[in-house]
Length: 208
Ligand code: GRF
Image (cartoon, rainbow, N blue to C red; front, side, top):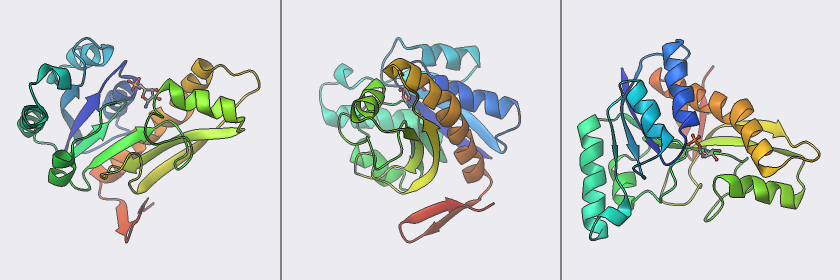
């Protein structure tokens, strides 16, 4: 059984996609043992409580210094005993101490086809604003393993989504979530839970 902790910062639609996929049997061998939010009053926490999933909020600004913040995150994670940490709309930079402790056990869903439209400052709705400003015709989403960089870890899954004439950033974000994010994240978790991920040098892929 794969214990996963989902880290969130907002509405939690990706968390909901994972919950629904587990309930429908599209993700097997997996239990969400906890949800950690970077903010106290986000709907993702409501989704966790509605599904009887233990949850907590750990906000950096609530701590006197970085060290106590890092310790709080490590303690919360330790309480939930994760085999895999899933960043699902989680906005803060993941402290290096967490990446070192959970090496190759953290995945992130990013709403573009990495290496396009990613990196520092390019998150959430800003990704789709940049996509529309550049005029690209195809965008999508990426699931990747998290390393010390920003959106730089090995890519596990990607799915393309068409940009349509006249799209607003909000319309494009919704399409990318519906047609890519909410499909890719459950698929990645199920593959990890069932030992179907192949690592070779820097590359990773899912064995069919
Ligand atoms: C959305 O912009 C999504 O594309 C990205 O994080 C934001 C919030 O997602 N992954 P969620 O609804 O909190 O899962």
